[in-house]
Image (cartoon, rainbow, N blue to C red; front, side, top):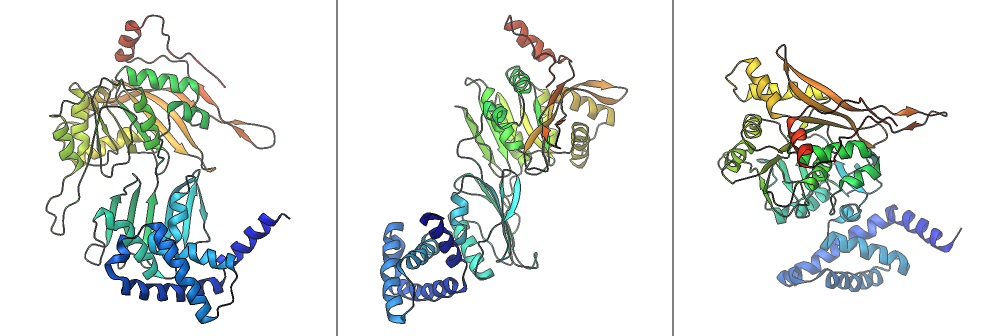
Length: 439
């Protein structure tokens, strides 16, 4: 065993020992007393200055209390205390780990993270719920959001583009429930999704054609299935000459486009005043001369405004929706429109949906954690009072000897019926539609 491995094992053992917890706790109390003496001056220090302060104070504290630790162990305590005073404590490393997608905290002793779609329990934890709440309030402080008994739920966008959701007692029983969703600093491109196996080249080509032809697209899937990442990637095909307006509850989209107006809904105050809903933003966006409107997630009354926009000259609009299949996606649109107070007949509503939506991209997260496009379906119209669809591609993994599976998408060999795609083909001679493809 190499020295590096031995040191790593020793560090891990010390960091999770009761001795480390006790020394850190006592030293932290000592530091808080010194910080109180410094007053406002401490708040102006840089992180490097805080680390130097911690090193000096810990050295004196260890010598005075005659604590038997070596220099390596002292450095580990210095790093932990610096994170406590200048960062986000036990969450610091997880927040900076690019492989971590979600951080899920169930009380002070349970921390789970999602990497590549798979949840794993982490060894880090908080001293108690008070410690957890101190870190949560430090995260929320720059956002200006209040969290207390009168406002026990917070859903907010972080400065780095991520999202945090916190629920505290009395709404949760076993301590604060914290969910942090992280987003890539460099959003995935369509070629990246092909490389990662989310889709194959034929589907990528068809989606590029659909976006450039200004087809209206809904990305359907479950929680954490990759809907937002796919929407970001599809937006790469929007011409740079077009004006795009994005509307979200919590801003998550990071479109790689030169002309984007990002709008975010606003929750009401303590008395409900000042509430601005996605529906309000969608109505206003129609007066902003958008070429395309992208709704981060369709989940309420805004469905009526979205369909109206898609039907009245804002072709090429896109959005995501929670649904388990393309057909279920259409049922959900009908249900949301009904909740929004749609006054017309069922047949009229289905005609509006069929005229508004051109393609539904169904994406899912497999048991392995991998995200895959499960279906690419075209909405073709209304037949016998039912919205008609045709599936262009379907995900059917191939079973290999030994029980392994290989990704495979089946093309049903059907060319899209959309007149928008036909117009694009006519304007770009020589471009053929993606053909039937097996493999």
